[in-house]
Every structure is written in C-alpha cells, then in structure tokens.
Image (cartoon, rainbow, N blue to C red):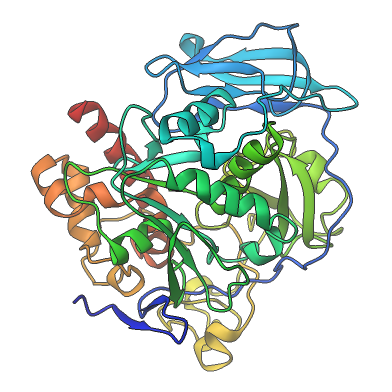
Length: 462
C-alpha cells in the first residue's frame, strides 16, 4: 500500500482515506456564507476554449432568437455533443479570431428567461441509453469529463466507473455543503442518472460530516490537505486508471444541473458563485447563470484605494486570468481577486527576513510566527525567473498520488509515449500539478506542460 495514505472504516462503515501529502494555503478573503445581491448580466457567452477535446461548429447565426437550452454550437467530431444557450434572448455576436477560430457566441438575454421544454422524466423507467440521450439533447453533456486526457467524455464509450468529488479543497474554494442547501433532491437525482451511465460503480468522495445520505453510490470520506478535493487524487487512491480504461468525472455543481433536468425538464444553468479573495470589499455568494459577464459579479465590490487587482475566473491555483469584460468560465464557481503586485517595491527583495511572507519551504521567518495558520494576501508576482528543473523532491511533498511527478513531467516534455504511459499519464489532469507550481523553485508552467502533453497524446493515440 502506498505510504501517502491510510484506509480505515468509520463507525458508519464509509471508506475513509487520510492523505498525508499536500498543502493548505491559508489566504485572506474566504467566502462568507451569505447571499449577495447582483449578478444581472447584460450578455452571456459560450467560450469554446472552456472545453477541452472538441472542434467547435457554430449552428446559430447572429440575430437568431433562442431559448435557454437552444443549441448554439456542436462538436464536429461528435455532433451529438451540443452546447446550448444558458439564457433566452437573441444571438448578438459570433466572434472569430485568426483562421476563423470561434472565440465566443454571445447572447443578449430577454427580461424573463424562457426554457426549451425537454420534459420531466422518471428515472426509474429509463435505461442508460435513454438517460444519455436526454443529457445530450439538453446540452449538459459537456459537464461530464473523462480520464484519460481530461476532455469532454466521448458518448460512444462506456466508462469503467464514474467519480464525483462532493467537496472543494483549493484555497478560498466555496463550501459545497452551502451550495447544495435546498438542492438536495436535484443532487440525488443527478447521482441516480449518472449511476445508469456505467456498468461499473459510481464513487462519491466527501469530507467529514457531509450532511447528505447518498444512494446509488459508494461513498469515500477524504481527510487531509489540498488536493484532497481533486477528483484525480481520489481516483488514484480509490481505483486507478490503467491503459485501455476510461472513467468519467463530474463536478458536484454539475450533478445538480443534471438532476434539475430530470426533475424539471429544463436546462437551467443557475448556480451559486463565490466571490473570494483579499481585494473584495464583501465576500459571499451570488446566484447567477453560467456564462455571465464578470463585471456583473464584481462591479463596485473591489476595495477602494488599492493597487492593480488580478481577477481570476476560478480558484487561485487553476483559474484563468480575466478582466471585467470577460465571461465566467463554464466550469468555474468562484471569482478570486488578489493584488497584482506590479506596484510593489520591496527593500532587499528575496534577501529580506520575510516576517509576513508565505513560504511552503520555511524559507522566511514567517514560519516561526504563525506559519501556515496565518492568513496571507498573496499577489500575482512570480518572484523569480524560469530556470532548469531542479530534481529536489519538492513536488513529491505536495503530490499525494502514487506517481513520480518529476519523471512524468520530463517524459511529457520529451514526448516519450512509453514512459508517459508507464508513469501514469492516463490518470492525471493539469489541476493535479497546481501545487507543484506553487512550490516549484524553477518557475515552470507545469500545468501548461501537462495540458499540452495530454492534447498531443490524444491526437497521437486517436
């Protein structure tokens, strides 16, 4: 058994996995469990770059009238995978870049949302193929991803198992227990639907004191630092992916969307989004529709008299840099703000004692005065230049998977397919290496390397 975790059984006979490796980064700006007002967006957009593994084909035209659930775009390779409008209204723009690459499809919403009617369905009377067809028709299939390659699941394949992580552990991540309040029935219905899509098992990972009693799933309790909430880490500890096997994964927020489809018969993309980070005057949650403008979420909420602010769609480790004119990513359920740091000038720089500086390796004196328990307001500075990868075992300290990250990264850079396969490329996604970037003294864009490696491998193998 790998040394980085322990398995035992709790008093309720749920499987419990305790992680030893990882890193919790204690940041200022945790989301308060209050519902804020706002989130009224003037336009909504579908961004093809949000979805890995597709070749987009636009089927809507500028000026078309659409409802929430109307198809705007499909995948050329798998045309049954549909991408639908999150709101009703008019298609105001189809934006393209170089070589006519589709950048975004923008919809101007109606005052009142109108939905395509997909019909309420009784899951007990449906088989797996009928459930799959319903999810595909409603445009909710992009919610389901697959390992290997971390791409949208291929509907013509049958997964060995399906995995759901019902909690988030990244810095400043929203509390799923709060997100699911009042939506417990939709969440369970979503699990019931997913259980019909595999002949294997549906695994759901939770934290201690998870408030719901789940059916149709084998439940594992995870205890330990981030990345305990990453579904890739959970797969590695529960039932790893071998060559030739496919598993599907889905975020818990998206399980709710699928459950809502069967309970209400509509594709309703409404969700709670957390406003987090040290630069917000108020943190909390907003009820919004996916694809909304980020300006509608943060307008007027940035603290005054501050320097430049980095806006991130998603969490601080895996999110994407955004502007107020950007749109919320399809898979993102939080907006994070941190100082940009471009106006900071430190006396002595790296040579300072660093009483108030964060350090994962106990480099600064801050490790003696509060250490990891202290809240930090980190900025976006890299604090160093890129250099050769240093084999110092620093990745392994925060990487709780039975994989050698340094060797896998070198195999990806060299694109040595045999070594990549032997070292576990089929199990990982870029997010699994986010903490490696945090502690990396070489300042290498590790997540980008992994993403490029997965994309090249998918093209090579298919």
